[in-house]
Length: 506
Image (cartoon, rainbow, N blue to C red; front, side):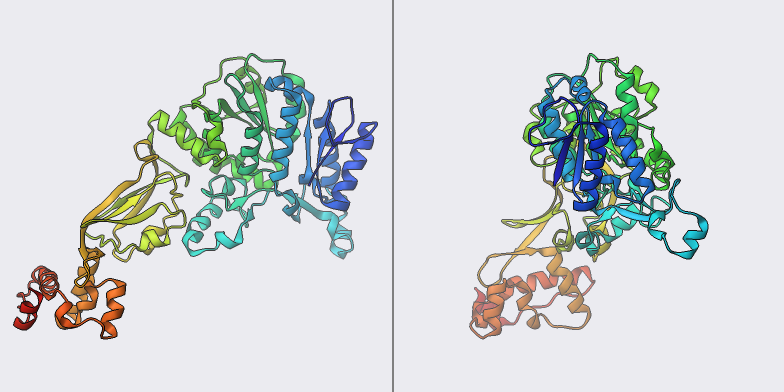
């Protein structure tokens, strides 16, 4: 639950109204400690008040991630009504899993002496809430994505991961107490369209007060996106912001840079997320506060799309892909935003293992008349590499990349002959897959007379095993034709089907 506390004359329906900032601090802290609810401080100077209260709570090992703020000045900068902005911030705050924040030993400031800590009597006050990623354990440890998630966690040197670990997670199985993609999506749904292109300033919460004091009204809309650590915004969100007409700018400032998990994220973030962003947009992403003051005086560079609201209900990824499609980008990536699959068509048997196991449903095997096809949907791929890992023929390779030509279309990777049931004629599956099994049986010395069920559909296979289908109903000519095709590839002489069965099949 999100509760708003108003301490000045602004209108905020349903909010708790108090008489002073000091009362607002006490009330907010009381709600956080007693109810574990999220609280938004509302009013002029709210971010200064936030910084004071967050610092006090941090020193006392209290969960300051449950705090948020909003200042009426933000609505003026964004060029929208106060009501719309407030609804947007409430939606953003509601999605954040702040109540799940981790607390760990450490912290630059703590009200505890070394002697007291060693005695263990006040160890709780030596805890600090951190931007450690929260894991969706149900899906994150699924075999189909475990390898991918391990890669995410390995990008920084801290046990349990850091903000950039969540930034490069393709399906947000890692998320942070101070931010989620779904929260950003809900916030954007409340404020777009803005009417003209603007900027999205991704700002550490403790720096927002200084930012608001230092900038005047701008020509272009300026939307503030509060975060705890600036290195949590992934490529998906950055491109999605472009789609709605906002050039993303990350401000590197605030005490968060001194927090270990955030500090450790900077280098890999620059090497991975910012690197990918520059490849796609040719725009610089990370700026100091002073640079931002100059930047927002100019015209934003955005790659907006028509009617972005129609995409927002489905998430940020469709928006990001629409931007890539518009730009016509084809590039290798460092992050797992998407991938391009390469396949050895000679090795592939169209067994369907990759399609069956794909966690994102980006692969599918389709049967059409006498052709079987493996189709790939670039839009859904999360670059986890599981298809490559499980392919029994080692026919697949996955590279982290994006290709605008593949967006919004099912791309055929393999097209091969399909066989039909030798009893009823129903489509059976790829010839290559069935012939691979026949090859193994031939090498083990099995005779074709023991193979008819390989070329039967499931229904006929069951009936045959129960004696409900006689040999007279089986097309042995086709069976032997397929078997002999395999024998020729193995350098073996073909076999003649028994005369009685050849006659009966005619």
